[in-house]
Length: 266
Image 1 (cartoon, rainbow, N blue to C red):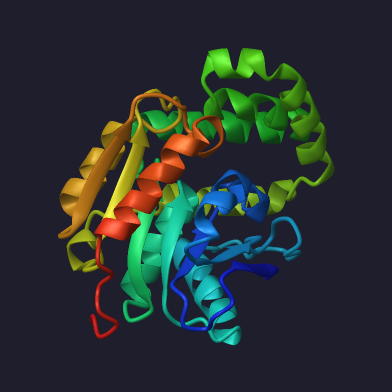
Image 2 (image 1 turned 135 degrees about the horizontal axis):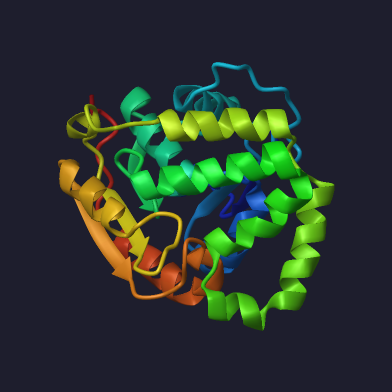
């Protein structure tokens, strides 16, 4: 997988791994880098089958596969101890890593994620699947911002949305890969495993998220032994873009105030 290391160069520097959502590409985190880089060694990556990480995903692709792939590529770069900030799917990758590689993961931030798939979110995903299968890539891409951003913000950024639509169409990960990744996401359920996650976990939710009801983050935090919840009043599903400064402040404050779990966790 294509992986990039930014910020502090000291091998002992605290390391943050940023994991994107269904889009999968590292560029999603651009609004966070300037805030994080003075304090951390920051790792971004294009997930397998997306962006610069070309691959054809297998039919039985799973969240465990996504976590194992990330752990392996990090280990290849001698990065074996890190915190994870993940958006939606990326947050679930973080939870899976905390379960499968507990000695490597210190803390996890899950932005607009969930314990198990909510019926409303399932409906949204099924609509998006139908758009891709029956209306094509362009229709899928054009509909995507409706699930990510508040309506007023979208109206104010129409020119940007048109430009991003063209970019996303030109670099689309492919129907096969997207459906495999979406299936893995929809099948992921931590209901029976949450009690075994010993790391501090921060669930951040936006109260106006159209795709994932904010109550999903509350349910996730409540199910974790060391779960914490922060709610943002506005920003939509992608508040890391729409309200980046606020989110960045929350991330830095929580990371500063919350101790990482010891590396000997089991």
